[in-house]
Amino acid sequence: GAVSDENFAYWHSATFNNAGTKVVFTDEWGGGGRPRCLATDLPSWGANAIFDIVDRKLVFKNYYKLPAPQSELENCVAHNGSLIPVPGRDIMVQSWYQGGISVFDFTDSANPVEIAFFDRGPLPGELGTMGGFWSSYWYNGYIYGAGIARGVDVLKLTPSTHLSQNEIDAATDVELAVFNAQNQTIIEWTPSPAVARSYLDQLTRRNGIRAAHVTTLDGLLDRFDQPNAELPDELDALATELESDAGLLPNNASRLHSLAETLQDLSASLR
Image (cartoon, rainbow, N blue to C red; front, top):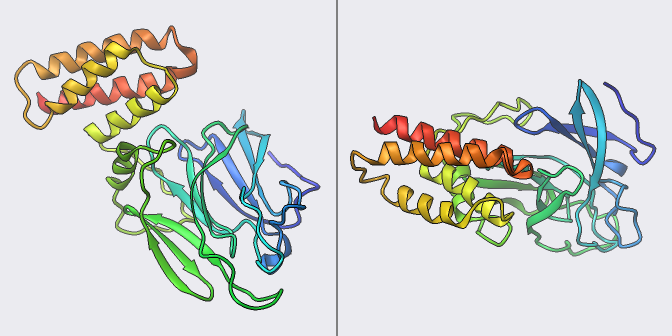
């Protein structure tokens, strides 16, 4: 499908989510040299436009723009970024020139939200001083932010209420020999306790899993590195219960299915 948007000045780039069901378009209004993140600027100016892909058609859901207002001395607009491979979520890291680096979650494409950021602050000088982060890409556990005036910053995510250590570990476990953001290589996660705990953290955050299952799963995963003969059957039994719960909890069904499938894969790896 094709779309137009009167708020967009410059359709700069497109980033699909890993499933290919959403796309984030960026608008580099002003070519990166102007301050488009002022408190008086509309949130649709120089921002991202997020679309769902439904029956091969683009369905607009919302805009995402750096939430922290910048000064009139800071060139700031949406620019280059990439996905962060957290299983079960659509997360992107993106540069905003002197606005810094923003990590945002667009799993709920109608309600994107910032979950992490890094900002060095404005360069000394007057309006028109060109600087800030031109790109920020995730690669094998690190974010590489390429600054125009200050060089490269290498960053690591830290856990918060929005992102758990298990989710960071699962993303870090994805290792690529070569990364090119333009290729959008499909990410596949090797089943691991970190992947299972990622889904568990997401479900717990949404109150989407029974407390008894949380306790049981924690215990099973704690035993994974030193398994006994009963562990594979116990993992399979819990997976069956989670699949049953998925039919009763439609808002959390996808993650429950993914968690159950991961447990089945872990069980198979022990047999």
